[in-house]
Amino acid sequence: MDIRALTTDYVSHLPTVISGYQTGEVYQVGYTETDNETAVSLRLFSLPQPINKRFPPLEQDDLERYKPIPAQGFSFGLFNQDTLVGVALAEQMHWNNSLWVWEFHIAGGYRGEGWGRLLMTRVIAQAQAAGLRTIVCETQNTNVPAIRFYRRLGFRVEGIDISYYSNNDLNPDREVAVFMKRRLEIGD
Image (cartoon, helix red, strand yellow):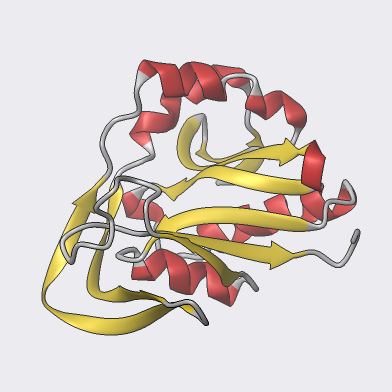
């Protein structure tokens, strides 16, 4: 197993790594707004039955949009020989000196072995070396394993978007976007 810079050639392999997750917990999103205050909250709840979330396949448009991103030098793959088993696809945003992680996945058979930590540590090191100030990841309130993973690596919840996926995201059976950031030691 080794971590290598991701190349454009491997963008077409992303669908083999992007699968989904299982969780027995979700964060319920609360939202209230008055003239004097707006409050957004996350409250962890156990589910009566675990859910298995499967991500839909990437559209061809997404793959085409992702193709130039590896050339920036912030995207990495976890390889078992020449087979892609993990991916961190990250794009620098010059306007605010940040790194946006568009896709971060470890194939099912490789989870829980520390590979995700090693892969994200590589992304963090590259961002720090480039003088970037923060790394941004987006996940869902239902993806408690991802939220816990990012927190263990120093990320924290810094944003919740209650209409990122649809105009009905706050319905109990829908997902709400959770934005997590890791501030880096370098930059302002």
